[in-house]
Image 1 (cartoon, rainbow, N blue to C red):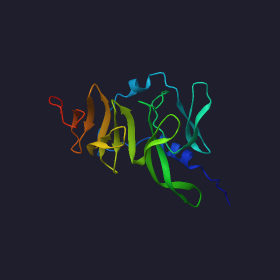
Image 2: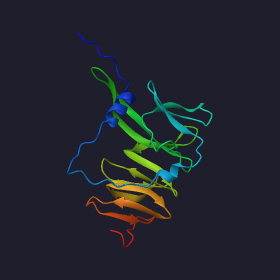
Image 3: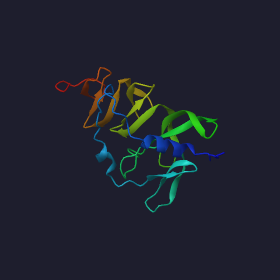
Image 4: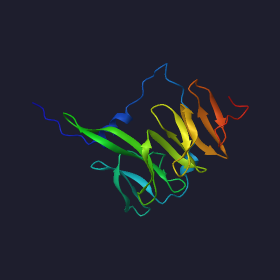
Length: 193
């Protein structure tokens, strides 16, 4: 009889997310957010992964600044997801033991500061980084909206995709698959639907 070793949840998730996506004709076309320039800054903290305990952050000298304990951090090339002093991180809220692995059955995303302290507690399904004082967050399983730095929803969840703000404008996609730009109040801007 072959014996299986327990695979840490973080490693299992890394393997699953590395699998190629299916070519589904019903899948919506991708909305490409040009977020690379947000992370080209000289960042003091860079994420790293520990197979035993998850994601954490190192400083420029390679020393651990925030102990690895997070289920997920956004990955943007070699840059840090800290932007405007905060970074979105995923935290598992409920673990269950399966036959071969322990896995997370409920997780949410919150925002930490550069000490690793939650400034905005985990309560979102997914999140992007702060840009111009706002961050796109998925508040339920489908809809994206925007929050301010206190965690208050300032643009109600109504989008299937949402990008960061640049020069007071963000690119979004509606559930009808219309792509357009919005201002910081969530109003659609004319001329680009």
